[in-house]
Image (cartoon, rainbow, N blue to C red; front, side, top):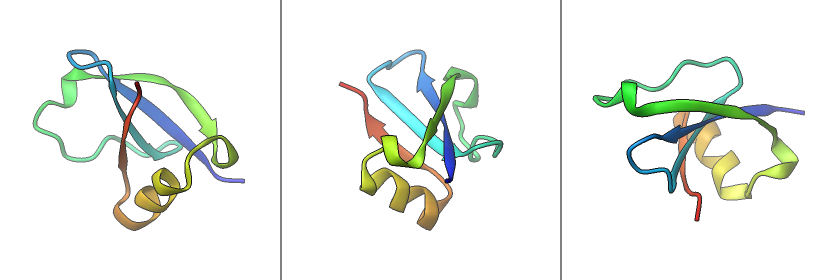
Length: 64
């Protein structure tokens, strides 16, 4: 089963960013604002997040 790393935006903690486990963060201008918050298995994530990572290499998620 695939796993995904979660990064939380320290300035806006309601925003999460998922990437494939072990992948680096995408080319973001504010890369320093993102803090690693753990890894989740595919079956624990909404389908749209998994589809977004597969299509784009990353997916944002509202953590509220």
